[in-house]
Length: 594
Image 1 (spheres, rainbow, N blue to C red):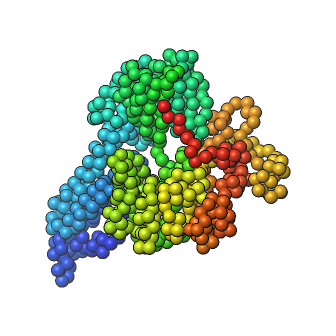
Image 2 (cartoon, rainbow, N blue to C red):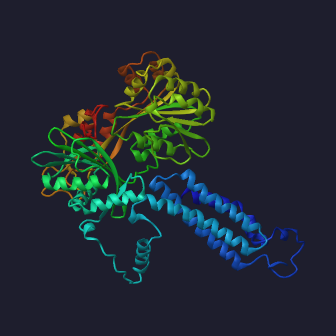
Image 3 (tube, rainbow, N blue to C red):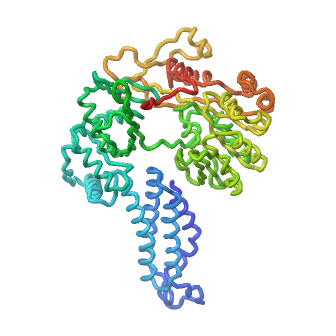
């Protein structure tokens, strides 16, 4: 249930006494009447069923459209702090006016305007920013609605004529990042005229169907090699002919406002994709190399929002323990992950499972590296390009008296020092830092120049996440593991009869995972809950081996132990777990044009 709907329901409940009273439609003077002497509708005909019906219908329409606005804002990452209050409070104020005004035919138009104007303003705003095929209240949108409504009754609507340049695959493109919408449309028009436009569409469609996060093309004199980043791993694709690769690159550069003739300098640009009723954002990065040119295409669809820590992959017992810590009035929780292993998602999910309605939350972020918006979390920014760090705005942040503060990127000792001081002021502090394991995360904070006695005194928990690929449920195969393998994994003999792995000799590639053997990812976690024994080590003897030993006594399990549980229940394979454990905190998952 959306926030707008919940708020409207609560507000309507509080107004219930007025809504059921005879005077709800018109004049407050009715409350002064001593008795109703002229029939059930009152001496001034204040109570009217048809007026009640009109306002009820209008109210229900507002609830429905406000719910859509709220969901649409989240889907497209618009400013909910601007639009939700505009849509909600404008109507609430007009509704109160309609209840009190003596003349119904004055209050009703005001209420209609209070519903229609904010909704119309939002639609105009969002239609300028979304993909053309995703716009609402357009001719194409009404045509689709009529087709959907008429289909159950057997009514057939002739489909719109498809431009030959948009035929072949169900994917359309649009310009993004231009100075004005007119410039973006001009870019699209130029790209559609290019010979490689349809080849570009087919390339992007293939990448989306494979669930690729990025497509990498390396141009050489012999041809164009192709790779897909799928579930954090680069998968080799079929090579392209140089002529085809050159043509689609020209179309892509025109779409992004880049120069197709320049094959040496670094160029960047953005574009939008609509594929099978889903919207994606694309980013192009090209750079000349010694052998030709390298092109990286990043693809980003709607981000998955996890509702709980268990959805991330944390074991229920550990998740409950972590939730208890996060709901404490004060503490210091360190969040970490290697590059490419879901740090942003981890931070966002932790914020979402916390109580953001009874406590004030502030997220401290770099203006040049903004994060996904979380409802009821205020954002304060600093500019790293000017040499600023989170510490430069923490005084201002703490003067606002927030209950929870998260530092999205921990950069310097001064920031940590100021955070440690605030724990004593009944504040919960969260901070994120890159690291390959929980013990390493703590050591990386100390490397900033932090006094271990100061940090060790207040640290509450350390969480580190890595992502592991899940075996494809449609094609994974079972095998009987040798006893030595079970021993290495720490799985007791007889606990499991079979383990699972990708198909070894598949006749045809699986249509679900395209032959990779894996489909999606889940997290494995190291969660160190700091007790007195571990705190003593963190404060006095902060060395990785000693931290691990003390943490184990407190119930901590390593990535290997947590991953072995996923291997035992068939979620992932031994080979995949070994790959993830081999990765260091410095592993790069997205090769950039250099």
